[in-house]
Length: 287
Image (tube, rainbow, N blue to C red; front, side, top):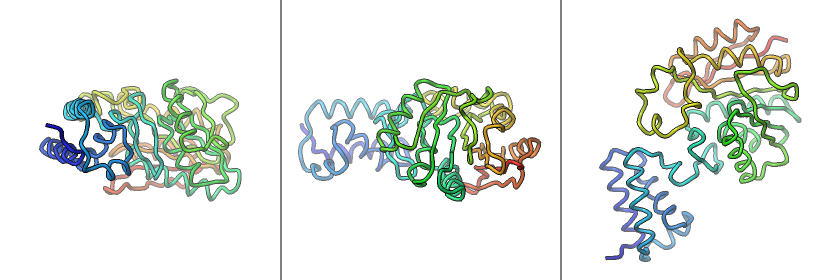
């Protein structure tokens, strides 16, 4: 018996809710749109129409994968961040609401730096932070840097998708190594590095542990390897008086602030996310 798009959506929403998925309503819509190859507008327009068998079969497959733990952003190949639409693949972390705190700070600092401000998004992944800065600060230039070739390919797709080619460039760079001589004179370096302590990874939620890239999660034994490396090795890439800002894990703000203080950074501040957790630590390079 054929079902309408609305029935498919209601059934998917029910199954997701029963499985305890928080955003069941939103996810059900996204999965039906993906299975049908429809935009959200087309989905709402066509809700009373009957779906074809291939669409039902595709939706059933997507639902099974979602209920097994696979994140919806990987299933549909896209996600949203700071008002931007982004292509997302399993080669990168899925952009999270928490990271919008990092983007917000980078945007404010890039604006304050004035026309021609230079911003580096290090460990860029999908490019979400740097692209949010470029989209919201028209006078700035942004570099997206990641060690992963697959991540850089995705960054380039997202630059094109958001029509920011004129002001955003993508380069391969290892955050654990000193920067290339071409990477210098930044007003702002924003970095969301791997910060999960190695021993904690096995205990992560299945949707993260089994699907998101390990290299984007593992921050070494105490989770602080990248903060130590970037703060010391990338300091020469920052202008005197420029800012280095990090996203940090729960309980890491004090340690990361101390690392910045040991490396001639001043005016160290911590900014909280919507849950009241210290999520971004930033410092100003002593000029």
